[in-house]
Length: 366
Ligand SMILES: Nc1ncnc2c1ncn2[C@@H]1O[C@H](COP(=O)(O)OP(=O)(O)OP(=O)(O)O)[C@@H](O)[C@H]1O
Image 1 (spheres, rainbow, N blue to C red):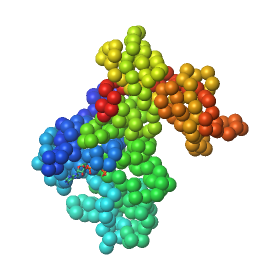
Image 2 (image 1 turned 120 degrees about the horizontal axis):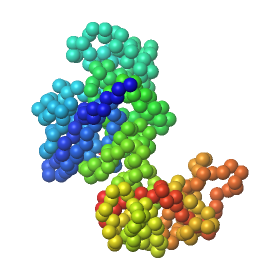
Image 3 (image 1 turned 135 degrees about the vertical axis):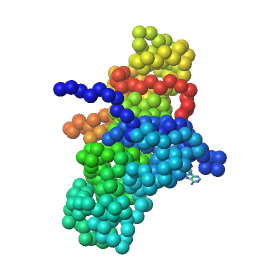
Image 4 (image 1 turned 180 degrees about the vertical axis):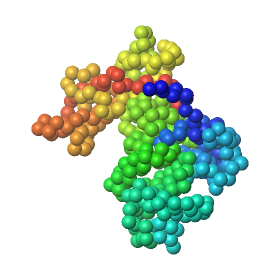
């Protein structure tokens, strides 16, 4: 079968976009391309500029600098109502005087697209799992069901892009997990490009094709969910996405793709990042090692002592005091293998070399 090797065009290009409010920078020179059919998440702590970026894509805010393009067209002068964009915001209320059907039908009616309206609305209600709810008032359904109605209402007009700003944050954990799975399924079934905002890193990892990790208005890393977790580009990303052990030091020797680092009281030899030629002797670096990639035993290179542990059912995570500083090590819990090690127990730790990520740069750069 012939394959189409034409590179995909971005459906949405954020091109050096900056937003200032009264001199304060909320979004700082952000450039990312989002491809047709992608599930992209903007992830970052409160105040990092996620919602402002989303509001600029929607057309509710104007960039101070830079451009936003949809299918190559500059959106600067196109008002919000004239963009092929759907919105699901946490506080975007449903119309309380309308039933579920009329809420979902609203966008089609407003655009005069009433051909086959009945079937389109029913299909959408089935897609979000609300078959048979059409005549219910919005006050007679649960919070999770209301979010499904909001989703159906946005999807029914078949926008090119759907923007979702923390749509699940008001829901309890169990419902939230269930709706995460459903949102992902719906996104795959409809093929609509989703741009999703959250500060919950687990939510971002479980749902996204790619994640833009934001910090103080900037995108620090834009990569697949797997690379965001396993190949953090900055110390900020390593710390914000999951737990990690960050050890700082300098390059002591480098040859044959291997780099020896002098860390606090210990040395480590790790694989150099492919193509990185900047790791001269003395360069400041950090390494990030996830707790699950630490090895714990009696014959590992770094002496340590147990400070405390937390048990999750499947794993035990130990906080350790070691020659390399405070470390976290997560090990599988072996049923029948006895109890967790007590505080003050002497152990030794090391790590799986291939799982170490080297982060060049001054300490605290990010
Ligand atoms: N209309 C505005 N006027 C002035 N400052 C604003 C305005 N909107 C946002 N900001 C500021 O811009 C920065 C980014 O805000 P934004 O709402 O984009 O962050 P966020 O990452 O979405 O945060 P959260 O997760 O808390 O919603 C914050 O410092 C905020 O106070």
